[in-house]
Length: 279
Image (cartoon, rainbow, N blue to C red; front, side, top):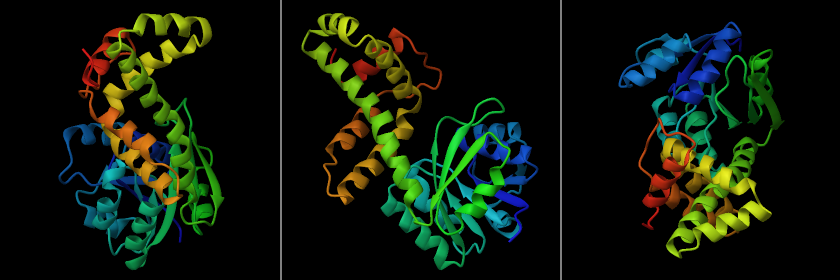
């Protein structure tokens, strides 16, 4: 199947970046504005996406539909296009078991499922990100990104390998950020924050700076990471491993107040740590 027109469900920060890369490569990338926010419309416009109005119109026009959304919505988004007969890429941070549920929805309607896992920030003209792909149609999908700032890496024909590598990678990067915030909150609760920071300066000087970054991430992105931590916990559980690390991380990321403008600074960290409990 020759792919000329691509649908994007729905253009968040990451999705619009991936969509823009495909537009730059010469593809027509569409989105459906019905029921979406003005923020989505601004992102779509900046990425030069074509508004087709509705998801049904997207299904009619596109040979490929991509889902890049918060993981808690992955199955629901797939159900929006149930019956689509083309290529469907799920590039969400979901457990392999969730990926199989999405694949079942797509394949029941006659479509072909490609599993995806994105590692890195949203791609820009000067910054690249990695898109891991797996499944029988993964090579076809990967070829679309040749020459773009999206580094598409085909893993295997395993239906859920891309989701698995995303779970393993984020288990460390985001899981340790949550752990670091929890440790700082504990030090405050026990009255030993200053001695802890002094010891960090001596033995692990990078941790204080990392905790500042973790605070900013928790404020700006933590609300999106709750579901991802739950998916990682489910992945550990399905492998017979303890799931408590990342269930706790989900709890930590759920507590801070959302602030999209938060900076990497002590004031942001203080606000996040207060939200975790200690005063």
